Image (cartoon, rainbow, N blue to C red; front, side):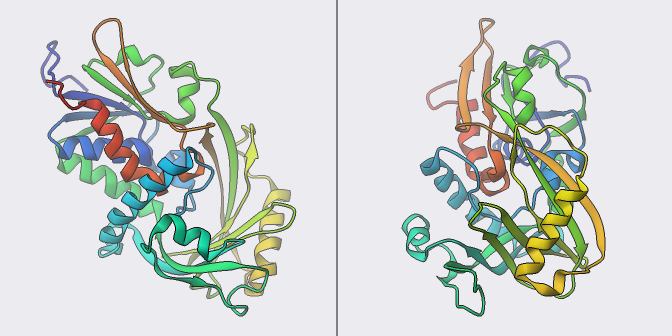
Length: 327
């Protein structure tokens, strides 16, 4: 795709590298603030790691905790608005239980923002202490295409291309939302894969979501999605690169979920999904000035919390593209 300005770079042009939820949300914020935005992505949104996400709003495997919670609460504002049009946006507000969680701890950082937050009853969660709340649950098969269309309506463009060097981007500012690809593009070996596997089954009638962690640290979650689908998870295998579904892992996921909701046992399997979460000790969100006068805003390392923090983080990244006081 050609630069609309020919060989002359415009000061308001931005290239966003990465077409997952973080890249698209950042591009949307920039485009709706008047920037001329081009997204360069190796794969269409439907084949990114974001497409595999269970996509329940909850800060998960993401640091720094204080920033992540602030980004998450800002994103909650956005998702609650988007949930008014679920068929279009893929965002719904759904009741469920977060196991092994104390209500006081949640109230401490959500400051009354969660609808219906209370301690789960024994009937709702008999495995231990849990909280019940109404949270955004996003259908990524609908949400990612909607994000892309929103970007296009704002004047942005999306181009599928493999980027091997951030210097390839012919714009005054490049935003690096490459996720795990930042290992090479930014020379950052501290961002590493955390393998997550899901099993999609025909929903036997589960209407609420549930997340539970057993004493051994293994997680089970059940996330109902439109179209009669139920997502079962999950795993968190550090430094594992395989994208092939593992049958033994899948059997374990179904077994753990069926222990919580017996009706899941024997549900027809529709699909297996595997994704590599871009985990880092902390999200990298900073601006770097290049020797040639251009700038790179690094925006990656969101682990399993990318969907949860996407909008709050995108707004902060957009602020770094054009810092206060700059021309």
